[in-house]
Length: 193
Image 1 (cartoon, one colour):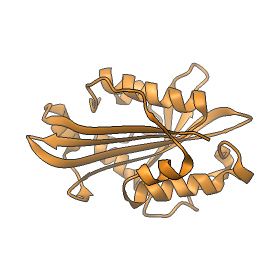
Image 2: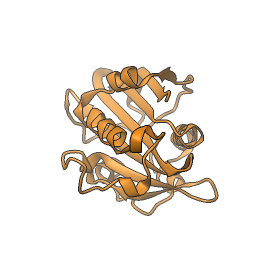
Image 3: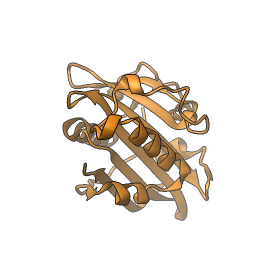
């Protein structure tokens, strides 16, 4: 299990589509958002799960992607998780429920943000800058996008990146586990459609 967040966070900033896209750091998050936005049929609130084809998603994004099923009991299960997700969590999370992957505050934070996406049918973005052992430079980003029909969210399409000095940060899990990470800055944003 993993523990990535330990502090209470404020409500997200509500942004229009242009400001929301501009808030995304790095090409991975923008490319994923652009793919999701293009998949929306004639300005629909969200694309259907059937509109998302991993073969059409740029190959550079695949390691960072995940698809979560919104289960009937209100829980969340990873349907698909890219290789980078397995590296972050130190095991493949495909098929696992969220509570099998995260614990305590991290689980509460994920359930909160996923629940807001399900309730609002609107994208959610989290960006956290961490210091590790007193040194700045770790950028954690998670973009969660709704998929569904008739206003009902059935799946979440997401992307997760963790970089240090613009390189993939391999030791995030280990640093987090030994409580060496301190939050330096945090942004959470929700798209207003």
